[in-house]
Image 1 (tube, rainbow, N blue to C red):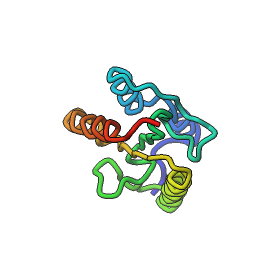
Image 2: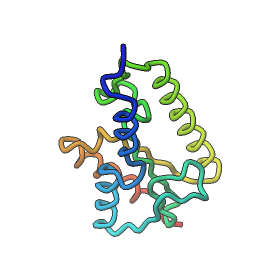
Image 3: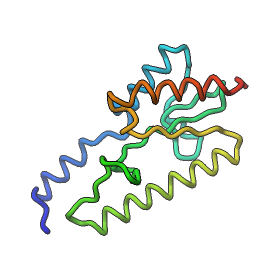
Length: 142
């Protein structure tokens, strides 16, 4: 099946997709800040460059987009009908990179929390934030 957009339009559309400061990420950051948690963003010194780093709790947060990180069983992860092999390869590589990053962080003594985009939808958000708050408060600050 051919792409419905020209190569130039597709390239422009893809260039507009942000990797940082996404809406899901901003929701989590705002929640953490209002609860008194202080954090760093996108620390390049850590494997996977986590979205949020809470050094006091030796904890990192990854906020994953359901499509880009292949959230299995999620209604927001739909395999594209065009260039399917290319997309599946890209998403599989993202999943592998995610796994390697988490393993390296855990080996270095970091706690990792993954929050999926779908968990931040309005009907799920309060529950997700409650679980996050409880998880962070169950850790003893370093």
